[in-house]
Amino acid sequence: MWNSGRTDFVACATMVDMLKSLDDPRLPVYFQEAEAGGYIGAAPGLRADYAAFSPMGALLHTAPVPSFLLSYSEVRFLLAEAKQRGWNVTGTAAEHYYAGIRAAMEEWNIEEADIDAYVANPKVAFDPVNWKKTIGIQKWIAFFDRGADGWTDIRRLDFPALEVPDNAFSGYPVRYRYPVSEQNINRRNYEAAAKAIGGDVVETKLWWDKF
Image (tube, rainbow, N blue to C red; front, side, top):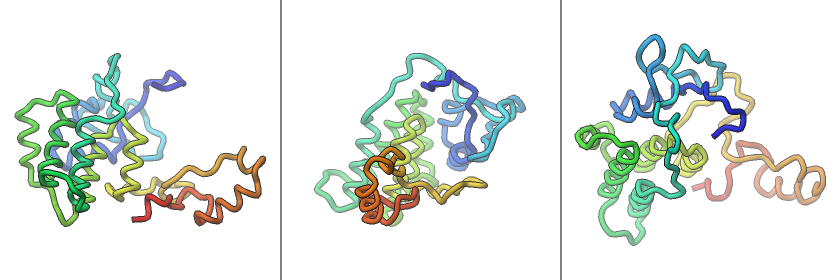
């Protein structure tokens, strides 16, 4: 999974705190308890002592771990969003949303009773008024092992709202900058493209991220 071969990765407090706040049964699947006990996440962007925080879940250290280009849970979340946007989709947004949650948990072998309890939890109830927040948070949790997809959806839906780490070099990044090679060998077009999008900085939103 990593070119360096390192496996000493620990949980981030952003995800751990979210799972705890929702009483999410995926917490002990995504992570293991820290040596001192309990599930502890490190602050984002800071150097973390491996022994002080929760390591990745045992399942994530087991080969092979299934990987999805487009999972069933993602399809149901997309259908919930499409319905909420007024597109021609059968069923209700809430039905697709809850089906997405169920499917996402089944992918991690969560017990059915735990799934039922989670779906019935008022803290995860579908909110048609704040649907971007409702769907966005659940998709972000489901995309735990699909970082690029999670980042894309955060940019599309603007949820969950993630805080910028301490001593960050920029605001929250919503795009990659053009590569240095492009700046060096295609300077004129690079400058024109950068100007057209509003500046070649990581905070410049792409066209699909402006609504």
